[in-house]
Each structure stands twice: as C-alpha cells, then as structure tokens.
Image (cartoon, rainbow, N blue to C red; front, side, top):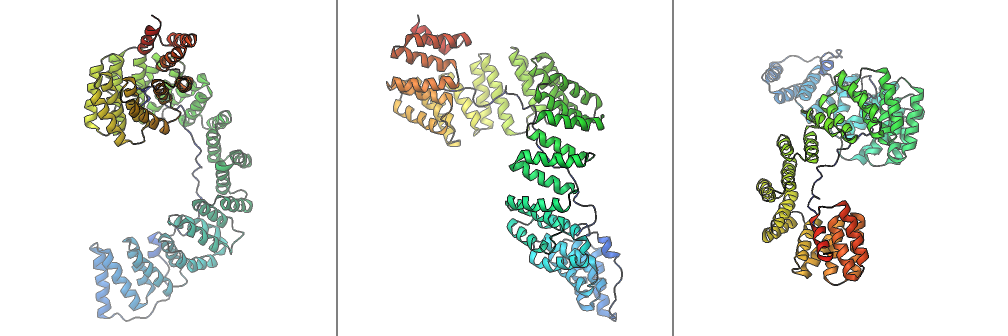
Length: 581
C-alpha cells in the first residue's frame, strides 16, 4: 500500500509543554578573581614601584615619541612593540606596564604575554602583573607555563584560594583538550584539599572530559566542605538528575528546605520536577513562587502550561487569562496556548479565533497551520487555502510544507489536476526536496502518469537512498498493476528492510506474497499490517486474500468492520463490489 499522507503531519498537535530543567543563573563568587582583574585602568593607576635611573637620551626620546605617535595614529601593534623595546632597554616597570596595556588592547597575544612577563620580572611585588599574566596564559591554553604563575598567586594570597580557583576554571574551560585541562586542575588544586572551590573546578572539568563518576566525587567534597554553597549543591543535584533523577530531586529538596528564601533555587527545583514529569509537585512550587510574585505573567503562564499538561483546563485558562491581562508576557504566545487549550476541549470556534490573534512571534507559523487545519476540519477549504497563503515561512522546509498542504487541500476538494500543478510548480523551486518529490510522484500516479511517477520516485531514491517509502511506492505500484513482479518484490523487500514496522510496507509485503500465490504468508503479513493500522485499503487486501483462501466469513467481517468506520473509501467499496455483488 502507498501512503499518501505519510510525509507530513499538518493536523498533529504542537506539544503543549516542552520544559526542561535549567540551572539557576548564579555567580560563583562576586569577589574579583583573575578574570575580573583585567581592567586596564588598574594597569594605568597601579602604584609606582622602585624605578631605575636611566638617562633620557635622544634615542630614548625618539623611541618614546615613536610609540606615542603610533598609538595616537591608531597603530597599536607598532606602539606596543616600541614600548616593549623601550622596556627592555630601560628596565623601567612603568614602560613595561604601558607596553602590556597596548599589546593587550590590540589583542597581540604573544606580545602581551612577553610584556606582562617583563613587567612581572621588573616589578615582582605587583599582584596585578602576575594575575594578568596568569589570565593570558590560561586563556591561550598554555597550562604548563601558567602553573608556576598560579602557584605564586595562590602563595601570595592563600586565604583567597577559592576565589582564585573559581576564576581560573572559566579561562581553561575553553581549551579543546578537556582531559589535559582535568589533569592540570587536579595537579594545581592538590595542595589545597580543604578548598571547596578547587573540588568544584575539578568536578566541572571532569564533566567536560566525560568522567562523571569523578565529577560526582569531587562535587560531593565541595558540598561537604561548604554545605551552604548553593552553586555546588545545585551542580551536584544537576549531575544526579542525569543518572539518578530521584536522588537529584531529593538533594534539591533538602537544600531548598534549608534555604527556603532562595528564589532562583526554587525555580530550578520547579523546572527539575517538570523535567521529570512530576507535574503536581512542579505546579506547587511554581504556585509558591507566584504567591511571592503575584504580578508575574511568566509564572502565571508556567502554572497554566502545567495545568494544561495535567488536564486541569479550567485552571489553565484562568492562569492564561491572568497572564494576558497583566501584560509583560508575549500576547501572541498566550493566545496560541489559549487556542491549544480550546482545541483540546473541542471548542474549535474559540480556538480558531485565538489562533487568529497570534500575529507574530515564534508561534505565528504554527498558528496559521492550526487555523488551516480547523477550517479544513469544518469543510471550509476555500478559507483554509486563504489562511494558508497568509502563513509566513522562515525556512525552505516550511515553504515546501506549505506547497504540500495546499496540494492536499486541493486533493481533498477532488481537484487532482490543480493539486498536481501546485506540486510540480513547487518542485521547480525545490527540485531535490524529498517530501515534495514523493508527493508529486503520488499525484502523478493518481493521474495515471505512470512514466513520470516512476521517474520522480527513482530520483527520490537517489536523493534519499534510505527512504523506505520511495521503494515501497514504486514496488507497490508495480504490484498493483501486476507488472514486473520480481522487480516489484525486490523493491518492497528493500523497503521492508529499512522500515520493518511500517504498516503500509507490511501491507505491500502481504500483497506481493498474494500475487506469488503464498496465501498463508500473505495473510500473516496482512494481519500484522491491519493490527498496526486498520486502514481500509489494508482491510480490502486482507479480506480478498481471506476470501481466496476460503475464509469467506472472515473476509466479510473484515470488510464490514472497515466499511462501518470508512463508508466512503473507494478501494474498499470496489473490492466488496467484486466479491459481494
């Protein structure tokens, strides 16, 4: 059997709720870290160190002027190099600091590293020079070069080792070799086993390197050392949500009980519950947040969507209307979900009106399709096509989809030639779109354009060589016309290998066995197909084979049951007329 409508699903509902858990956006620490100490004003305003006594010669004066003029004329590379050469000559830390500033501003990585190293050598007591050098080395992925610099930073300020580690990790996280980063962090944090932030950094790197067991061990150490640190607690829970969701939720619940006023954490917990489909508990948490922020349209909207998922449509509508009345939430989004709600409740007229109020935003295209579907359902094909033509596709796939839906509407109106013309025109715009190729081929077959049908299907096989329905379409078409049966059987078998659970393809297998005279094998396939999808064409085939094998009562029952559900199906009526005149 060939499936004409298998290529797209105009009338399938857009999912009512697609929520997942996202960790709350919290800062690891607000105190300045190596990443924060890159303010160039700090470089300029740094306290003056002991200075060398260097006479100002004509050559030095010339080089100073050269550097300043280059900087004024927007030639930062020349300016930075001039000042770096001067710093090497004068051994003056102020000049090295200026060279570092210019190189950093102009993003000359190698020159900046050289300048900061020189500045540190000339002014070893400067924490800023050391911190900036560390940041540059880590950002450049030079982990081993950075190790002694980091050691100096930590030794100079051991009380702030935690802040240093939380500042270091974002810099090394971008390095491509995640295993190397993990090994390096294990090494540099090893001397500080009682610093929670060191374990946190190792846990982060372990996740990036795919070593989740190590990550769980390390983050648990961090939580044990700092039990009130919400960042570590949430990270531990997040790791467990991936491998042991109940434990992850329990950890969040326990931490939230100790910190009930942490709104970000409660929101994360609510989303985590939602991600685990614990809708009632999730709604309870969102309602608690809404109680604290009664004017929040976003929270009201979240409660509404959960209520929809729970089937509590009255509550969902109440919250959606509340979100709409308060403003702040995108009105088109709210109207879209109000339409979805009314469609589920079979209030099609209200749903249609709500879809029409979705004027823009991410749901505007989906709203037009639902509007078309409801008009088509009501038998208003002209209005449905008009609504379709107002849809605004954003991708070529959506443009092709609109062409196929337009053709489908025309086909339902029995305007087969018009439907075919719409598809062929669309195929001119998108000649290798697999869905358009398939639908155009089916339309050609409907109009008995057998040669064109086969050409289009064979092109589809080249464009999409693993498309089971292409092989099935050509194979079944040949079987149905009783032509080139061996070739047809091979095509259908190929389709069956690609999609062994597809009812239409199983039906084709059964029909092929029937034509080969293998009635028992045919009935086995056809029974499977009919059980998977009680399609009237499958019923027609199954009934015919049962009749031929002598089970006329069985055939009558299959036909009668299918005719009751599908009284207007032409294929079923035709076979019944042949056998039950």
